[in-house]
Image (tube, rainbow, N blue to C red; front, side, top):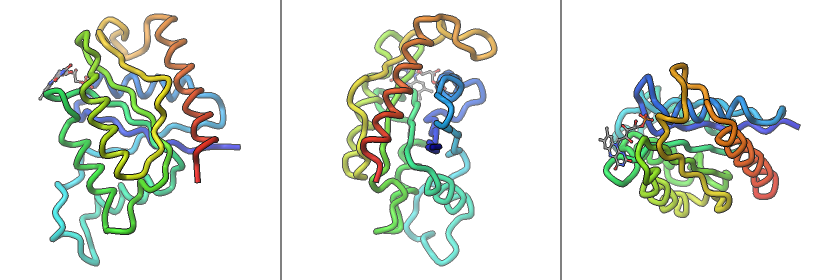
Length: 184
Ligand code: FNR
């Protein structure tokens, strides 16, 4: 059986370490676990006044893409000890119109990524707060804090070290089991 997972990357930049980690996780996933990026960079800032019969096309595209998946993998850097604004905006866009949240009940997992040693712990845990309100059963263990990420990826954004690969593979497998256990 196939499970479709939306990969939402908190960084918008082309050379993003977070995106590389997410794409490596896609490659490490077992057959039947399809992890596909859903882009957030073109979403206009959430404004309830735009929530009309014809909302911004990028909102509609985003809502539709996430709605057709069964789970969400968030891979994000930390901005100023929290999540990037683009990621918060995507959460807000997906949460409305009221009563039609695309997040409702979807299993989630969080991987935080940083070139620093603290490994974006702040972003990882700030992200958990809206996911509680959005009613997304979020995997608690294992946790994934990927620090010193510049040392873990080569110039093509591929993982260099077997132990990192093994860890991210085990995290991805644990998430697949979590999805199976918690999905609606
Ligand atoms: C950062 N960065 C950063 N890193 C960190 O570990 N903790 C932090 O609080 C911050 N704050 C922060 C704010 C802003 C506005 C920027 C642009 C950057 C550094 C950040 O981790 C680094 O740029 C990463 O490379 C971003 O992730 P991507 O884009 O490589 O996925």
